[in-house]
Image (tube, rainbow, N blue to C red; front, top):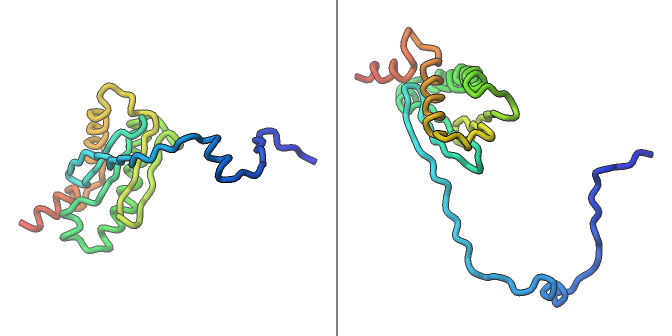
Length: 160
């Protein structure tokens, strides 16, 4: 018979409302004020980003460039975003951050058709915003081109 070593003990007992209030004391009923997270935003040649430092971690949401959504066929945008962008994001992030999972991770979010990216523990950098912007520029410049041009540039030129 094996024994679980890391098991936590829980004391079980019955309590009444009165005894619970005695143990807890007075309850603060002041409403808690929650502020939404504030993300900075930027648009690059091939994507749009929202980013912030949260609890010492860099959190980024990548979105398809608005021009691509307007002018590309939906299947082309979906293929580029879920395959080409994802692969490039993985390669560039691992090289730039000099890390892999679990320190850096990305996940596709179907509801918003975006990529969620987290760089764990990088929020302590003196210029974390500058570090992230340099990452975005490297990623943007590393994305494969369509007909010799980055996808968003091709779309923007086609519309003019």
